[in-house]
Length: 116
Image 1 (cartoon, rainbow, N blue to C red):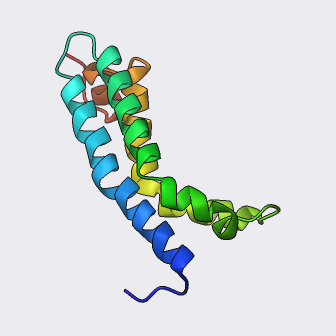
Image 2 (cartoon, one colour):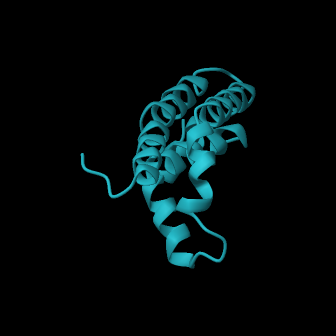
């Protein structure tokens, strides 16, 4: 893929890692945590491990962050970054909901199914 700048190439690589491997780790281990009687501690563990992983691979991105997101950047730039991380944000929200007490009955009721 042709990038407009080296900074854009680093950002694209970081966003694809966050939206790929880390997001699917959060999602799959979040579902796995639902198998336990008390899924909250496992969900917190998954979130912690995922954040540590994301920060550990973020060195090159942090080095170009000022060029990619300068001070005084318009709100549209932040929205653009959030849009590029949408899969990660949805996965993180799911794992966070489990960590805060969402269980299978809650998921069923959100989807309109009768709880067991």
